[in-house]
Image 1 (cartoon, rainbow, N blue to C red):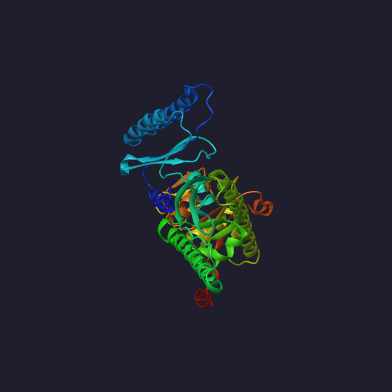
Image 2 (cartoon, rainbow, N blue to C red):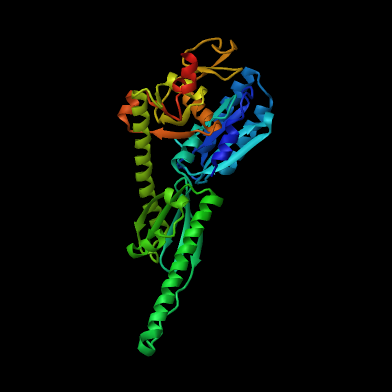
Length: 388
């Protein structure tokens, strides 16, 4: 699965004179075992792109990339994974990714930049999550990425067994009980340290705990602050009976609840701040202005948001009006038919969080596009003093 760092690298590749190819392949249930429908679909997309490239008289290397994609697609027939390819021979770029089959559709786009919105949505909607299923002796770790789960290790510290005799005045029994308690505590601390390391070294952004009720207080007391801050929740489960499917089902439920709550909170904050003329912006024009000023902390994009804009080929300035010349540098402009994708690419390039919004009537009424800001440049104290 692609990482945010890889997305950011791809977002920085621009002005490639219509030689940047973005190919998204969503497998479909075949009508026959030969997967002829998939082959025909890919061939049609590549054929159309080749015709367009020839008419435009662009870089001949585009044809090489398109034919290579066609060859790759033949190898993918019958697979269950979705495939994503970003290619630009002019800049020696070829990136292939296997992703869960959660793309809306197959598509092939040739442009002056890579189209990252479909893939960015998977990365943002399904952050890398670590799940531990634990009891006092055994801990199993799982990693969830883009809705898929895989085992990622285990820790086993068997507890000492009780002896038959309690010894003189019950001394042996008390000693064994204390020893068992100490060993159980060491086990919980080792698990907590492993979770901390998964955040530091593996980039896990969310954590989930599965255990019996009596085990939770023992683990909770040892959790590192980094892990506590990213703890989505916990679920009650018998660790010895928890299959991978059960863990994934419980994890998806908690992640969906947490993601929905987090998303609604960001939307409410952005709308409220915009209404108060504070750290919020709604509507395409205001969001574009805030992005160019470097004010944006989080970009909010409605799933159904669609709009066109113009973009300067020289300085990159975007305008909601379809103008021939840039208002900033007077350079020639290009039409951007999918401004949402351009905004997402700009956000990724600048390390801005992207939040995809759905089923929020107030947000739709506000234009289905917005931003939560780090600051407002026009409310900066220094600028106010200068202006006065």
